[in-house]
Length: 166
Image 1 (cartoon, rainbow, N blue to C red):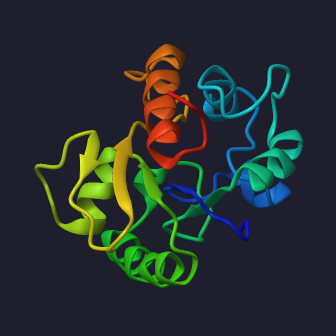
Image 2: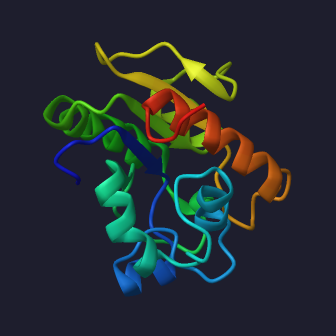
């Protein structure tokens, strides 16, 4: 985690490629890094996790997952794993105090928090001084989210965290 954590992206769990490489959103074709480039968080030309990691750290952006166990698909996780991951996340947030925590995956956020009516956007935060946002997961399995919609959502979140200028 960066020393001056402004924005913490929270993925669901590592996919198989991410688990093998130790890098978040590492599968070729994942839209996370292209969306961050479009949002102005990363410079043009950054296309993968290895290139992005040091730039994100310098910008005060961290990435973690709710569940540490890797799987081919998020729907292979048990609800109890997700709820336990949310409890562990509270420790990370208390320790690092990011301005914004952004959950990437509305369904997983609903399971984690028990708020079955949650919608994308700003949420009520359980952590004083930290905004909570929910946005679409960038996995290619999440077909309703486009690169354009991910870019717009991630930009809004990055602006709220002070990572990019409005």
